[in-house]
Image (cartoon, rainbow, N blue to C red):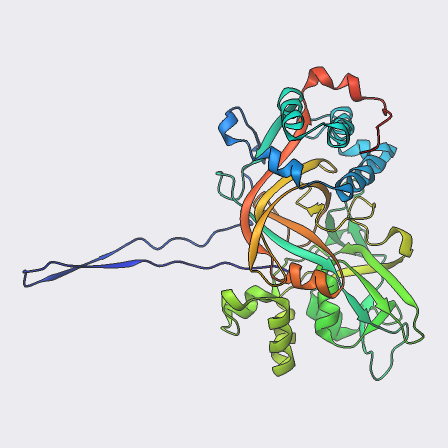
Length: 414
């Protein structure tokens, strides 16, 4: 579900009129943006904004809020209410108490501010605003999109459904606090790197551990990339599946591999285009899929709690953001300022408050973030076309206001 990069080369020809010679000046080649560039040791992904001119358009973001934002905040608050959420704080200097109180205060302001001006004034007074340093230290973040696809499937293998999604294997080791994959536990108790995607698929090492079967390798891969799916079974019933873990192997995007092979141009890159290439040459695309050594495992979910993000709470279309939880704090309210695709009118400004409630295999370092676009075919169009730079902001109560919002407050209906 990942979008991709371009290199711009500028060559300037300077012709000296009236002279016998021509001089050619070549501008330096602009390097490819390294959106996955890691932070240096000890560095923070967030920078406190002290210059008011660097603040985003908070009034416009307020004007774009609706009941879905309040519902998403409630999901994050449910996560903060669980004792297990405390293990992820303090995050740098942000305490659990401060992060939770910040959400309560923002819910109160969003639900009860009389107008945009009142909201912005209270936000300036009560909150510190942090900007992501981005991939380049200047705040540039690449925003891609993901969604929960819908596919036909079978709980048993058939001639039509022959490509499995597997349950989590018992030898997969993850960090008990962060969930970060560590590798495979060997028989002697040591931990080594897990098997590659090619090794897992071609060896059938997990035969008997299949959760469900899909129609083709690309459909299975799309579920891997998005981390969840709604599946319609032969009897008409629905099955909901979601993320249960992934291996420690490196991630390589299929779209980037197609660009590298010249199968697609950057401007035509989208999920429908990837499908078309697959239909024309399924063997080649399957080989490109194997370049992504990372592998994802799944479990079945109750429909009432699906789709869920890495916090274990339901995600909300265009209100849930996935980031790298090694560098960004969990659960809080963020503001995304970027461009997004539409169904028929090209790109539009996307300036929305969201909640940092999820993560993803390709979402590494401060220069990457993924917008959850929803469920099904319409969401696929939006997610497949989402590839734009932008800026990312986080909001936390100033210390002097935290105690006022430590306990839940009765919030008036919006």
